Image (cartoon, rainbow, N blue to C red; front, side, top):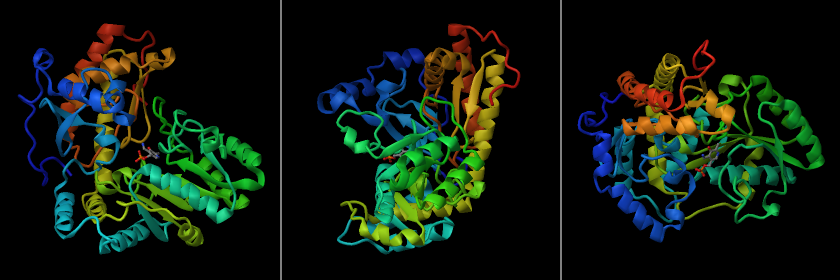
Length: 445
Ligand code: PMP
């Protein structure tokens, strides 16, 4: 939805983006909170929201959000192109979702048993996602991907799972990208392949031999710090055929891309249906929920695996998910994200060209990413850091090395405003590093 179609009014830009000097002079609430956090939170912050991994002047702490705008604790407003790293698909505080949440909260959230919303949501998902005959729910994407691996093993009685090298499937010991606190045994039964390289999947499957439980694959290649690669349909078809031939379970990790590319699952446009799919992020517009969807043949295995959690059955996130899916459909959310993402991509390509800077824009426009060619050549994010820092200073929140997310709340006007602010950010990159020697022929991809 657009900012003016039912969303609460957002403050105008004037007066909300503090001038650089002013922002840096005031005793910032963000700095004070960081000081306090360092005393009571290991490292001051952890995980993917640790602001130490982004350049200044990105804040660590945020106060509120409406539509595609967010405000930090020092009152600075940003056009948000990270969308909470994916969950915010309709815009922050979407009125219909918030109304459903309030209605459910007035009844109950966490009880001795689930509410009727759980059955309604499972029915809705089974109706929406063609490969799915049943649904199970949890909280985070990691819960969902972990459960898919357990179900694949329970169904096949085998151990080996193929995963793309460098792909992120969560933060549990079996899949975390950092080894601290894990043992080699935690990932002893994972065998890597290269995304979009079917021969490498065949080789990994040969290595697994008769012990192949499944193949876990993300919707497209969206490894942080790398240009993204859309999924090659021949690759998807080949992985499907391989799983069928070898009696292995094909799992689509749709945690990041789910409900942004296609409401029936991100591989629907490719005509390839997985046996299991994992969802979280966008499913409930910011409320904590994950889902595993599966086909009939895996129902018994799913039933055998004992998984649960104190908060997994909570009703409010399920009410939020029902409202989110309804609004995505009714408001043609994916079309809106595609339009806004397309405008952003065109605008950035034009600006980079005008400044003599070579960039690559990759991935679907709803989950875009941009790198500077000279950064990639040097193996750095120097230009990306300057670009995103200068954009943030002017009130646009992008990420230097992780893909961005569009929401249905990004209107043409929001994208235009953001582009007014990214132009000087490109100028700052050029002033600092110079323009590229090879003139761009086509602009951003
Ligand atoms: N799979 C994919 C593809 C993801 O992008 C993520 C999160 N970035 C996860 C799994 C894990 O989700 P969560 O952080 O909610 O546990």
